[in-house]
Length: 307
Length: 232
Image 1 (cartoon, rainbow over the protein chains, first blue to last red):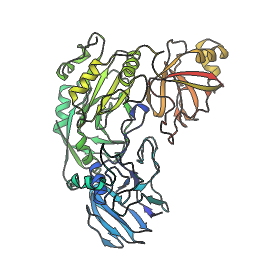
Image 2: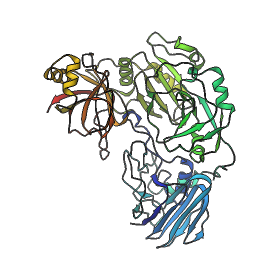
Image 3: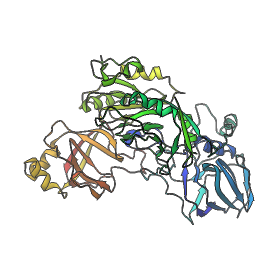
Image 4: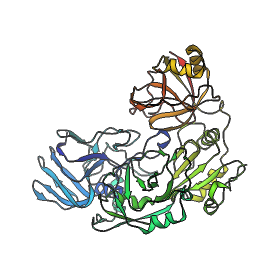
């Protein structure tokens, strides 16, 4: 075993890019809320983008590395230390055997992503090691004293096994790292909690269940992220939207990013662990590429929709 | 041939007045999904079978780039990867798909052994105005169709061709229904894949694993499947 969890912090989960395509069985896609940050962290240490890493909510995590490794931290920004010395974020960092990695409370954003060379080795369900907080599938949240294994790494820095890398047609063994280098995403700064996050929205299937003023209200006001938010949904507080069709909606399929509006008129944006069906009308859907930012929004942060 | 509404603008009209003759209506759902609305559940099941190829996992007959095909009570949600397939191609696929109404020739058949005698068996039979043995016979002799999942992974809402087993939910849901409980509620029958709260009338139990995360196919029953209950 390569890593010991000394303190898990408030909530640290194993996440990769999730398991899409199983909604018809009742399973959420799950996976990292801020996918681009996990991808970046993975690529920095030479992992395939879809390798499993840790999603660290609000810091507080302390890990002791039994064996030497290389790690990268992306996503939220705060003080992360290795044996007490601050390490740079968004960079690969060598870790000596016995070293202790500590995550301080983030100053910007909400969730750190830690990639470890070789990827976190955890059981897979339908090709993914992601923890799904709605269904309880996937690895349990990290606990003190738990030990984490990592995938094996070859001498050439490419992965030998232990992750679900599926090479494209014609891609030879060992091409992964080379290909990865070409798609290293730009570093995106974590959102400033003092400023509004802007997310683009498109029309949802039940936009016509609301009065004409509701769309205007949706896109013109600053919403506030409620502290009740989690990996299932980002709950918003603001001036409520007004539903005009009041009949019961038979449960229907829900997409990632759906803004579902319960009778309170206050929308919830469905995030990675969202239920696959729901019975409240969806007025709008957040663009997939803007969901990463919502995963970094802090309770009380302002959110603006562009549509 | 069913007609779909050609543009989202038409769909904005209240009340769905632009429904095509077959009752299929395409609703916008962000930049990488469509929601297809159908008149009733039988049409949903047939359309889902038509899209996915007889109840197998989505993707068997779906074009490349389709991610999920999710049936529900009155709708089928189709999500796709806009980098792999154009929305217009998805729309064409959804418009041209033929519903598969012939239940016998499509879908897998799943048999579930049930020990009848759940805590609500007597009360439910009484509500339906039949004896317990008669109700069990009706439950085992009915052909059930897996309509859609929900509630928990592996939980599938099963429907049949008659309404003689239609019962209301319990007034007070149980806080813990054991895994494997076989229940009735409304027009549906179903099996609890795990212990959870629930308000269905419990008429038996099965030892079958409805959800086994260690398997490549974790769900015993998938939408589109035929299900038969037999006495254990």
